[in-house]
Length: 221
Image (cartoon, rainbow, N blue to C red; front, side, top):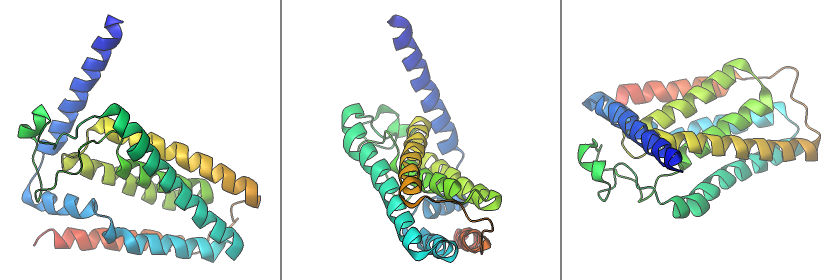
């Protein structure tokens, strides 16, 4: 299977080249912005606004079931990635000091992440949530926002040098699978049909945009 070995080697080289290109396009302003965007606590207001949206548009029992399904989506994506796939694949993060390319990777605020990075749990979790929200409401503006949010989160992980693009793609696919399975189970149990009119869809979009604006301002300092 020499051709398969050559193909995997070529893909690995391409993955490295794209990573170094993204990571190499850095400056002090975007170091601050991408580091903040990649954080977890900064997005708590967005998560709260999504919970509000769910309870605003669904009956409370259905809303609670929806939150359980979202939690299962994230647990599925996170644990399959971190506990099952990573220990088997053992792919070092670009930023890991044992990785030969680490000397060319730009590190922000000393952040290197854990040892292994395939697949990306950041990508799995954010895209898992984004795809679930898409399946749940099928609202164009809200979908564009959550997908853009997940995509920029993935870009920030490559920018920070802690994930190869291939790690992020695999994580996004894992999130899609988790969202599809958990949404399907939720829909089957609750006989769910999306609301004809989605009320207050602007709330998470507005909260998310204000969060980004706050990070853009913060990044100047």
